[in-house]
Image (cartoon, rainbow, N blue to C red; front, side, top):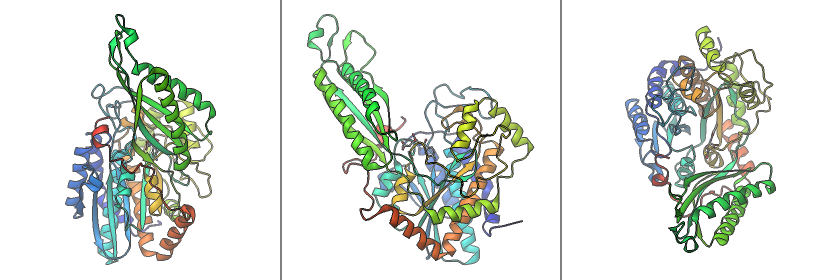
Amino acid sequence: MNEHPVWSYVHRAQGDLHALSNAVWATPETCYAETRSAAAHVAELKRQGFTVTENIAGIPTAIMGEAGEGGPVIAFLGEYDALAGLSQIADLVERKPMEQGANGHGCGHNLLGSAAMLAAVAVRDWLRDTGTPGRVRYYGCPAEEGGAGKTFMVRDGAFADVDIAISWHPHSIPAVMLGSSLANARVDFSFTGRASHAAASPHLGRSALDAMELMNVGVNYLREHMPDSARIHYAIIDGGGISPNVVQGETKVRYVVRDKTAPEMLKLLARVRKVAQGAALMTETEVQDEVLAAVSNLIPNDPLCAAMQRNLDLLGPPPFDDLDRAYAARFQATMTEEDIATAYESVGMRPRADLALPDFVVPEGTPVPALAGSTDVADVSWVVPTVQLWGATYAIGTPFHSWQMVAQGKSPLALKGMTHAAAVMAATGVDAILDSDLRKRARDDLAARVGPQGYVCPLPSEAEPPVAAMAGK
Ligand SMILES: Nc1ccc(C(=O)N[C@@H](CCC(=O)O)C(=O)O)cc1
């Protein structure tokens, strides 16, 4: 059998990290409120003998563990934030929350952080046993879902001395991530009017709710006149209260504005601001906005993608068995044909209907498309050569941010997929430690793509990590 020298270390350490993933699955916490999940990651890093730094960039749930000496610095990036409202009973093939309205790991970040740490532990053990100079780090990064934890960490210089960054994301088909992702900003628009009795003195009131509704309508018209690549969505944070007989004096709406690159996204944001100002003018209210978070577009790295592909090809698909396939088939039966087609298309492959779990890896040369969403890994990828894997941890077709993803999150198949992703990442890390030419080509590739202007942080300089604004949201 083809073997990479680090794989025996991955297999030896996997039990501890499966336990961490299951513990994090059971304490789902959202954006900047991941206190128990971060504490579990810190405890495991210490138990594994890593030197831990907490409170990175002033964020209580941002952590880092380091081991090894000298040599290059290889970083494995992890996440552990969950999503609101997705609580779900494990392994149950129907929608049923464990606790109504509670959080759930609907994007697989319980697996994401634990596999990244498993890769770090395996590389550390390999460094020690082979006496190779090199340092390995695990970065526990909070608030990927909308909080741009890594952008704030990058701005604080947390990755300044890192040579190579490696990460992954749970999915259903194993593939190297070749494409980019969308830049975005998350902006709160707050309208202030004047409250008044809606029947007795409506003429004295100035409605902040009218203003917010007009802004939303105006942006709906703006959508007709923006680039195809752009996306705008919003959520009402504060509709001004539940009393129709009060002219609503204060409201707040949160926008996400996305486009291919940060400069294009910021141009579109300026147009959204004009719509907000127009709405305020029409209603004689005031509007203020605050950028809570922002991320750039991902920069893929050809030499590192090729190195990761070699390891993925060497390893093959995860060793799923008949029980895993039967389990996955029951979940796949809850999905639509379109869900399944979307999973294949997201890794550049033609849909097929005959598989609940992959018995293949996406071959080199497949046009794996850009990520349709955004990720704060992007900002790391602007300052450090970065490579990522799509791991296979769920039935093919499992949608992101769905109850099905939560339900499968601690199944044997998810944990096998987690170990598999860790093995591909660890091997790529070891290759980067051993091969200074690979590191140089990765650096050159990044420099060529970034261009002379360098990285420009998409956050306004006054923005602070929105720990209080986002915690629990
Ligand atoms: N490999 C992935 C990375 C991120 C996501 C994702 O769904 N990200 C969210 C949050 C990203 C953000 O707002 O920064 C999104 O696009 O809405 C999905 C797959």
